[in-house]
Length: 244
Image 1 (cartoon, helix red, strand yellow):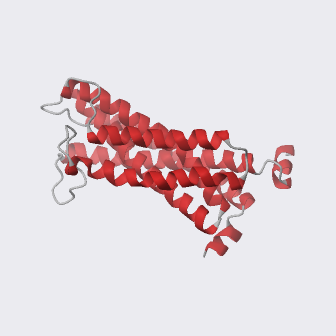
Image 2: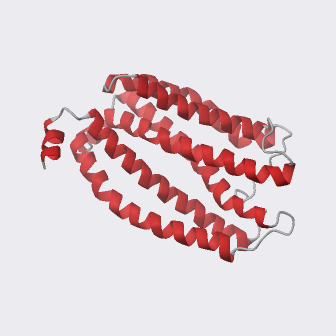
Image 3: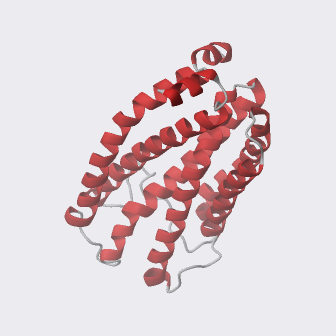
């Protein structure tokens, strides 16, 4: 299977696939952002307790979910690279780090803005908040570690190893509200039998989660395309592409 993927997803082939996909995903990204923002700000109701502050969930929740999903995917790609030496998987792994760091930063900022009127403070060393901050540090650590090394496929091992080590933080983030007594509220939309949120808010929230997923895919493709060119810059196919 890995041998097949290695043959099919050679750098030049993968670059062509990614380059063609960006336009498609980019188009839907614009539509989804406009629709999701309008739905959240103009058509979803305010909360009887939180008032208009509740609209922050349409940013905070999707960003939080996708930050964990991004790290998980980054770790999977890192594992494939380290075990089977599939070099394009290593490129995919490091390409997710900048996007994950932005999503995690959005999660922390939007959570702080929500926390001030609800908790009376922008920050508290709550288990969920602290573990999410550690996630940001992991993303940044992988980014800076990769930038400190020479452009070589063999130098992808250290960032990929760090990505695997950080996986232990994911269940801590997810279950922190159940394992410890924290200020952060418990799960809402993950209780599919009876979500703790009205459908008038649940539907736009789910739509925005899907929108963030498409946004993630778009920026991942953009970053992946750039990284392929960086690591393959001395190859004939890249030089030929530059001349064109």
